[in-house]
Picture 1 (tube, rainbow, N blue to C red):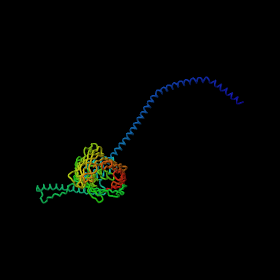
Picture 2: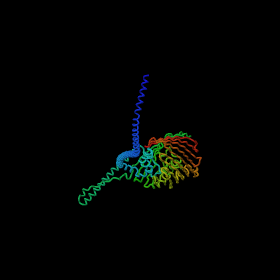
Picture 3: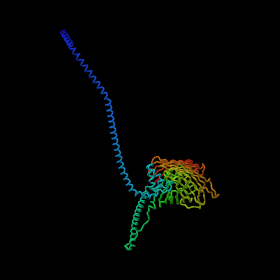
Length: 562
C-alpha cells in the first residue's frame, strides 16, 4: 500500500515539472527546426553537386578501364612477340644444325663419290638402260624393301638386255658367284689404278723428255744424258670392258602322278644346272655365254654378242631365244611354275611340234635387229618395241640343213609402264632325215609385271606337219597339219616370302576339240631367301586323247642360286 502511495506522489511531481518547462521547450524546438531546415538545404545542394560530378567519375573510370585493357593487350602482344621470337630463334638454330648435318653428309658423299663412280662405270656404262628397265629406278621409294633389294641386285649384276620389253635372260648372281664377281671387280679396279699411275708417270716422263730434247737442241746437254721414254702397257680397261658377271643356279625336281602306265612319275630328277657369264665391251657391245647340264648331257644354251649403241636399233648375232611368245623369253626363275605352258613347249621350240630335239629351250642361231621406239615424256618408258630375226631353223648347236631361213618377228606396245601387248609371227621350215616340214605360226598375247604381281595370257596357232607324220610310201603326211593352244596365268604375292600362281593351260594337237589337253595348276612359291626358292605344284589334267582322260600330278622343285 505504501509503495502505491509513493508512486502516485512521484508522478504528480513530474507532471508539474513538465508544465513549468513547456514554454522553454517550445522556444528550443523552434530554433532546432530552423537549423534542421538549413541543414537539409545544404544537403540538397551537396547532393546536386554529387549528381553533377558522378558522370565525370564514370567517364574517368571508363577511361581508366580502357587504359587498363590496352595495357593488358600490349602486355599480351609483347608476350606473343617474345614467344614468336623464341620460336624463330629455335627454328633458326635447328636450321643451323641441319645445315651442319647436310654439309657433313655432302662432304661425306663427295668423299664416297670417287669410289661410287668407278663402280657405276664398270657395272653398266649406261645408267639410262638400268633406270628404264628397273622402273623403275626413281620409284624405289614406293617399292617394298625386298623389291628394292632385288632392284639393287639387278643393277649390280649388270643387266645386258638392251630392251626394256625383254625380261631378264638369266636370274643373276648367287652367293658364290657374287664373291667371284667382287674379286674380279676389285682386281680390275686395282689394275686400273696401276695403269692410271703408270700413265701419269708416262706423261711426266714425256714432258721431261721433251724438255730434255729441247735442251739438247740448244746444246745444253749431251745425247748420252737423255732419258728413254717409259714403255706403256695396255689401255684404260674400265673405259673399254666391264668386269664380267658370273652366275649359276640349279633346279631339282620330284614328280608324282596317278596316270595309268606312268608308274607313279619320274620321282627325283635333276631338271637343270646352268652356268653363265655376261658383260660389255667398248660399252656398246654386250655378250653372254650360258651352258646347261641335264643329268649327263652338257650343251651350250646361249652365246651371242650384241651391238646396242642406240635404243632404237640393236644388232645381235649368235644363239639366243626365238622372239616368239612372251613366256618363251622368260628364264625359269621368272616363270613361277614348274614348267612352261604346253603351247610354249610345242610351238616356241622347247620340244617342238615339228620334231626338233627336246632341250632346245626355244632357241636358234642367227642374226636379229631390235629396238625400242617413242619414249614417254612423263616417265621415259618406250611405247613400242620390234624384233626381226633371221634364223637357221634347226635349233641350238646345229647347222642349217637347207638354203632356206626362218623369219621370226614381233611388234609390241607398252601403253603404261610394265604392261605389254604383242603380236608374233614365224615362217620357215624344219629338216630332219631328208624330210622338210613347214612352220607357219602366229600368236597374240599380253604380259604384266609390277610390284611382284604377274599376269600372262597368250594364244598361238600353227600350220604345218610333223616329221613323224610323214609316210614314205606315199610321200605324204597324215594328220591335219594344224595345232593351237592358249593359257592364262596369274601370280599373286601374299607376303614378302609367299607368292601363289594359278594357271589354266589348254593345247590342241590337231587344232580340234578331240585332241584337247587341259591342265589346271595351283603353284605356291616360297621365296625364303634371295638365293633359295621352294615350289610345290598341283596339276589336274584332262586329256581327251590319252587312255587315262583324267589324272593328277604333284611336282616339288627347289631353286638354288649359287
